Length: 188
Image (tube, rainbow, N blue to C red; front, top):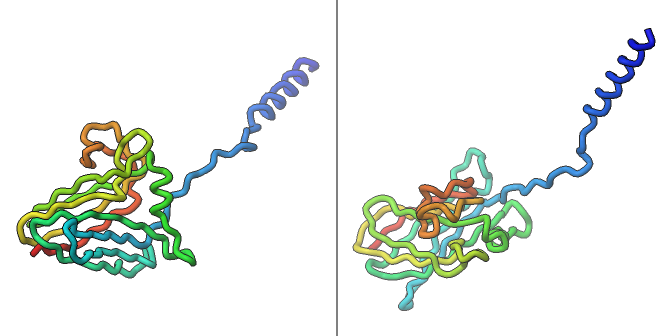
């Protein structure tokens, strides 16, 4: 009988010890940025009018489609580009671009062209501490006249060491998409 009581006490003690957890130090969660507005400013290198492309989605995943401003660019022209990200659900609006720049090693923009236009994008100097591009600033060289779409994608925690990623190829980047917007552009 003594042995049974001793075994019961040991069993209950073992359960009590193994059921304790170390929730005293929870791991902090890095929440994703809320991005409601993407603005892309394209300024011709030789002078001229700045073209502004913008996507505003003030209800997030709500029923309303984003308000998208399209643009017309000049053929055979190089533009300096800059992307601004905002969370306009905050008052005043929160500039998410600053957070992306501060967390440069965890972010990278990728650019795609679809449709019947020829344009070449290049990163323009905003790099992380390892010399990998972030892509807030870029250049785009337009080709002949046509119409199509410019697609801008911000990836969170891409594998910047993967093949082609540093050159802007999203194929092997991995990570999660923070925002993806498409703008119809006309090149004349």
